[in-house]
Image (tube, rainbow over the protein chains, first blue to last red):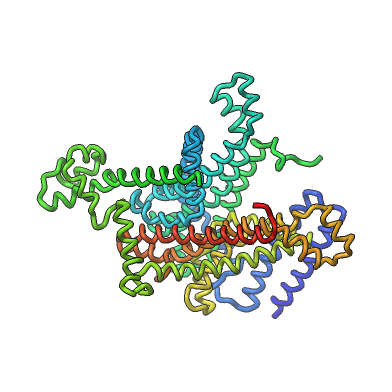
Length: 283
Length: 310
């Protein structure tokens, strides 16, 4: 009972603090902008911990966050091996291959109006399909190791990036292209100096969508067979053997990796498309 | 409709490439079968052939390339094989009056569709309510919005088995609820983001006008903000329904589901029947197409009725 009352009091206090922070004179400072969501996140964790302990929920169903943290600290070696297998070998390589392939294909398609008209609707449609379903087929083709995971990731990230890049390449208007022509710029000069920079916001949009898809692809592919390591492997076997705290530690890692991956791409985007209105900062 | 010719050309090209790719993909199992049948194959023995490239095998054994187009368990089935299998598990079942049998893809598509719609409904509701809360409360905006973004960078598939286990332990029968939760998780975010944008889309002038009419907060919400957000909502719904379908299929993939398209894929993998996987994939693609088009039609009708120029 003490736990329930405790978390309710904490919840009320944290909410009151957030309300005061947001309506205070410092609401627009960076510190407060970070502090408010952090406080909200901590509140959720405290609620989780308190509810699990207060109601005596079995650890097989839902371990409290403190126990997940202990499991995380105790099995860092194991988690690191899984991280290398799934993220560095599977997801990242697949992401790079898929992104480069999509970019090159987009450049090729873009040279033909006919192909653009034909492929864009199909690409848009395929991007909406549940492509994860091809995972078992690709695992069958490329074997259990990271190659098949990278292949699934390539297929998953290819279409979103392709569609966005093709759309971005069409973003320049006739005036801008005419200007390049008056400079006597050739196709490649126009491409490099005008059209690719103009397409960058779109390309990064596709890349950001693809970061999440890459992790999903790599993890799902491991459900269909993998060497005895990898995040997806650990999650599916952990659920079977009821080592739930380890599964949550693995989920924690995947959340961390997913956010970091997204953050890195967003950071690069900020550097590359600093000129775009959405990136300009009010002074 | 001027896109029709290019689209059909590209589709034909894809099917053509697929058909050509069948030969190199299936040459090894085809040669194994031919060899077992007593044919002379260069080089002999499947172990010997492992280090020879598929194209060299095709050149050396031209007579047996055709075998690869009629395998029972192909590595890559031909388009015709997939079409035949798809017809056998849908149209032919209907013709026999067994559309709801467990072997019929229509039954499995229906199971998947139900969870998808529940998840879509749940996710859309959460997304819209969240957006209203965010637009009207600065605290919600500042504290929840960052977490909504972070929630989407978490690969949901990592959570999927956990959600299934937890809901099992809590005593929820069947897999409908966990699947719906997973698809709602994927579906709420685009709705939330678009609705926040849509509810904020009325200009300062428009809001001021309603103030001069002395409209209450609820009135300006119902008469201005909500209608203004409808175009944004429909764009998000199209993304959301596709995401909900992905979520349901992901929810069916791990840990032993028996019905649903995802389960068909899983079972096809476990029993080594690639044709079942391929026809389930085709079925999922058709389902996605139908759902997105349905929303698209609703969007057109609604927006035209509301007077948005389309």
